Image (cartoon, rainbow, N blue to C red; front, side, top):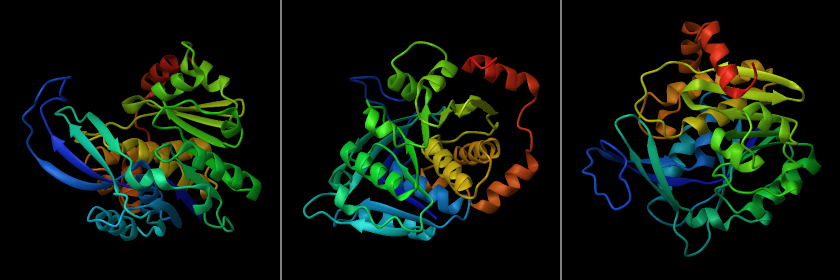
Length: 311
């Protein structure tokens, strides 16, 4: 069983030809709202893409933004541990998606900023605690220390990027970052492989967008190429990867296969609009993997390894 502690937002999404530059106004097209937030997205991915029993600690306001988020999480089978701070709005995010499926996101944390150490539920029965950095860093650290003391595996998606204290990193069993977050953490200009080796966590995973991902477990390095899909919206793809990865690891799936599953889930999430609405079901993921056992040949793998400094 997996516990996700993190953010939950209502996403306001506008489709536009390109993401506005500073001072620029762009005429958009479609506008929709979706349930989002890194924590909630990852909880839905864990539950929906792998069918793993998933609970979530989250904070919501007493407003009209909260019910769509609760409905999305409960519809995916996530058990909620909800904190409702008085007089605080539900978190929200404003997302612009361009014609190349890239996005720019601004987040107003709202109730997410109200989660404290005291809100963590008892950890008995959980194998993994999955967190991100859209809730207070002090709370993330407190939850990680509690999980470590309880023998629960700590998985941290260090996003959005910010400096992390050694005390927090020392509790993390699996660290998941993208390339920019990796470089922000290690403060160096070397290769991705150098960054993987520099971090003290037992396992580190670096996502590289369409290229795929690389990882280090102990002294062993892994590389997984990306899956080619027709991308519509990349919002939530990284969160889908994290949730699917932790779900696989909670089922004692070896890292190489877990990376394969998570990469496929993230690719499928790019083929639909929205964050949680785009996360594939376990059945859809299994069908996709059955049809695409080897996403790319040796040349693509070699290119990934060279890019990451593993060759």
